[in-house]
Image 1 (cartoon, rainbow, N blue to C red):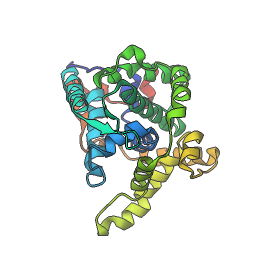
Image 2 (cartoon, rainbow, N blue to C red; image 1 turned 30 degrees about the horizontal axis):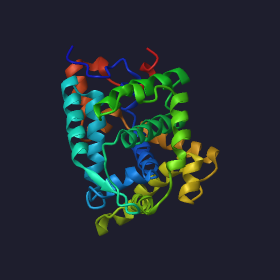
Image 3 (cartoon, one colour; image 1 turned 90 degrees about the horizontal axis):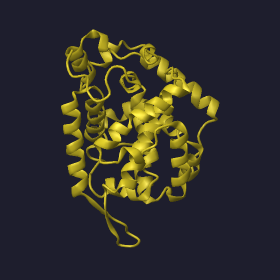
Length: 280
């Protein structure tokens, strides 16, 4: 057996993060994160994500894949890189002129919680089998990933109840300001080559609309764009999950960055992630 990494094949995270609905969950996280004005300014003022959308998405996927399935050393190295980048970046509040660091603990906590909530919400609602206790275990496991980006693990929610309390506390700070509108428009119509516009309209827009529909009601209210009835959204999530999960895992895992295949090569075939292993 090689180094099992920071989470190990016995974790809920190991099984969940191999699910194809993580891509929809990631887009939901972007919608949610954009509602925090200070956090979204940090992104818009320090990157040209509109020109490098795919690159940014793949860098995020690579970080999640490395910290989940990579060796302990690789995960720690990825965390060090992220912390270094955050330490060098600042953003400016256009209303007050205040300049602040994008690595503020409050901003890092918002980004972390929006991601973990989105991963858990979309996967469970789309049919990934998790008990409430296993969902709590998943949230607690991600105090590890919170530490990697620079947060004190003790300050990070470790259960569904604590995560819900955090969102209740932070909601007064949220708004769909001009920066959030930029992200919303981008996610619906990302720039692409003229020949790929039909594919964007048929495929990507459906993913973005489904991710938006899976947001909590208060997010729909802030964006001012209604979503279908909750039962309709759940049916769509389950149908999409069922369709994507029919694609053989070996085919899906061949897509870059291939973290799961490398983990299985390092640890053996028994490290293969699968939903039925969660309760073991």
